[in-house]
Every structure is written in structure tokens, then in C-alpha cells.
Length: 91
Image (cartoon, rainbow, N blue to C red; front, side, top):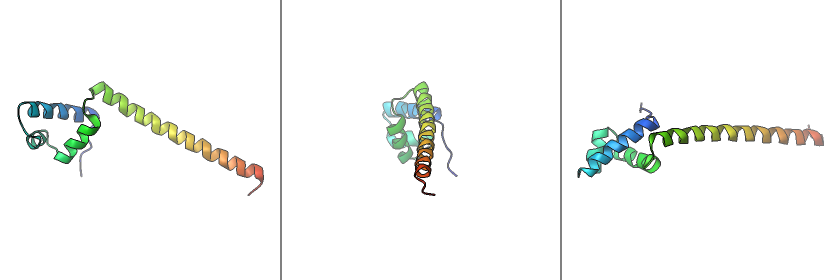
């Protein structure tokens, strides 16, 4: 089963890969050194490239808060629809 990496670990591995690339290594060399596939490297680079550790933590916190707020809005919308149906007498 694949291991789920934390954002802090991903950023550290991307920085290590950047060092290998700056020294003239290839992407394949960098991926081998950090222990991930090229596909994972490119996906991580797309999502976390250029972020610092504290920014990644803040991003994850905001994603959790956003998911919590979406659930709250959907629950309230469902309650509102149920009350509207009850007010019309459509039981």
C-alpha cells in the first residue's frame, strides 16, 4: 500500500530534488534520490512547487475549514428544503 506523505515531507523532498537538478542531474536522478516516481514528482511540483512549510500547513488548514463550511451549508440547505416542503403540506 502506498505511503501518504505529509505536505512538509513533500516540500522537503522537492527541495532536495531541486538541489540535484541544480547540480546538473536529471529529473530521473532526482526522483531516484528522493524515492518517488517521476509522475509523483511532477504532481507534487505542480501542487507544492514554490511553497514554504508554513504556507503548506496553512493551505491544508484552509482546505479542512472549507470542507467543514461546505458540509454546514449543504446541511442547512437540506433543512431549508425540508421545511419548505413541510410548509406546503406535501408529506
